[in-house]
Image (tube, rainbow over all chains, first blue to last red; front, side, top):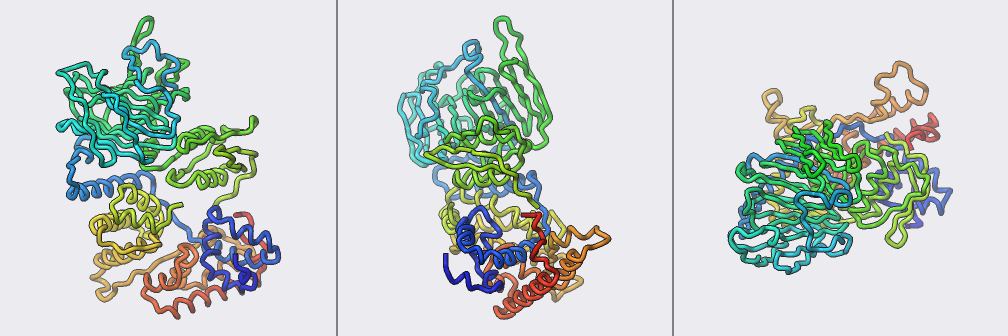
Length: 410
Length: 191
């Protein structure tokens, strides 16, 4: 920080870009704060300058989230079209096909409660450790491919029997005729702090979120297309009425004909949620000994919740379903969500642990969005600002210390 | 934090996440900016879409920038002026400029009030003195934190004239505000 600032006139101070930057985006620059603390006589002038800047704040409106997303869909679609014209590897199915439906499923505590009595028990070949550092894909041959990026792209090319991972090509096992698909399952393991985009053999696109595993065949040869999920994923399913697409999670199955949806099935969550944005899906709790089969058909903008302990499947309206897929764009959005639940998501995305004091009111409802491409520090600052707490980051752990009065916002 | 320069270069190189960063970081600002010129939401959205389509089409030929916000706003303003003047060109065939109408939130808060305290009156008077052009310059200077070269480029002004307008505005604000002791209290509640 420059000593000359101390002699600045009000106008000069207002001409200083870093100063204006600090007033406008306070949380991003602590240097000025420190400088003023060290020079208390300077504070009066700073306050005057600050008041002028704040007095000149414009009244403005924001574009509603729905329009933001719609506009983004058009723009990203256009980008895909353009880049496809150039790309040599014709992965043409990355472009969403016509009649794509939109569905989002969020699943909680999978595995721990009813893992043993599910009808189609798939055992992941890999250990249940999704907490490692390295995202990886395990092919049906047993070959392991490290997914080096934070956001990897994987595409199956069934005609060539190849898989393309971040622009590198790997060969898949030649499978026997109409064999048992389970033997030919590939798995993708995404640890906390990473995510991945996949293109399955039928053209279905899957976004796999942090701390998740997905098992899928190299080719869909059965009468249904089945994949297994633990954690959270968003699906954009290629329509095929003759071969329904089923996501199995242990507790519930989600059956679709052609749809775009998101499933979150983290073993630590109590509730499994399925949100449908467009189209139609069936959420099913398979029947078994001593238990009736339970099925719900979802309409767009509806959410099915399955509470594991109570074994109950219920439906509610969800006006802002786009919130649930914001993570595929690198955003975390929350609308009247408890602080605790938001913090738990931040833990997953950044692969850290956050500690709250035992008496901390974690059920405060907060609304907002976080850019998950920012550093952990930035995200915690934004949350601390909105929710009013102090925290420290020590040895990769976030320790929330105490609640303070939230800053008033305009 | 990734800098604008890096994001922009990633985009030019065709990195696939760069576009979404650029879009989501700036779409609200572009909308907010568009609302200064027109209340036609569809026109604003179309212009944003058009702007991004152009970026995608020409990404290989784009120049470097370390201020994406400025780049987008300047192109946005040009595009918007073109389509708005197409719409009203019959009435004003010679006019290819557009006028920003900026309302301050302090001003807006006072709109429905019937009686003013001394300091509210002072705020109102101070802001009321600012011409539309001054307001636009001040918006770039203190909301967008653009420098004078950028302001001149976006508004097609002379450097001296832009500086003069700002210093005149600041002087007036400073006087009125200190006269009425506003520095002592205004907006204390908002911090």
